[in-house]
Amino acid sequence: MSYQPEHFGVWFELPVTDLAKATAFYNAVFKTELNLIEDMGPNPIAMFATKGPEGVAGHLYPGTPPARGTGPTVHMSVPDSIDETAGRLKDAGGAVVSETISIPAGQFMYCLDPDGNSISLFKFNETA
Image 1 (cartoon, rainbow, N blue to C red):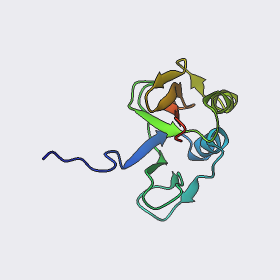
Image 2: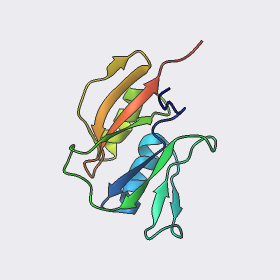
Image 3: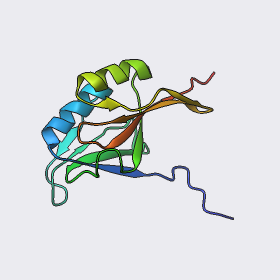
Image 4: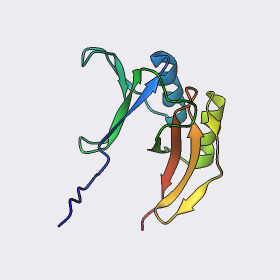
């Protein structure tokens, strides 16, 4: 039998050129509060919060992002509609690079953060 974990992706890390500015961007776009942690590892990080300990999350860290739009894409859950979240993303200095794409699980839109990291705004379909 092949390996089939509940969550194949377990963590993500996004390199940013200015941790404070990137934290403000993600807080505004996703209506969240990243947690600044300065005493774990060699660098400070800003960690995304999840509802429970089994949630898949990640963090921002001071580093060199890949060339604009060339790195892997992190799909991130939106707090409201994709259009509302995309509006906040643009207002905060990000860029939308695709139309909304529908798939069986939901909808998403490719975007770039101010550092050029590729992210997507993802909305799961409502379940009955």
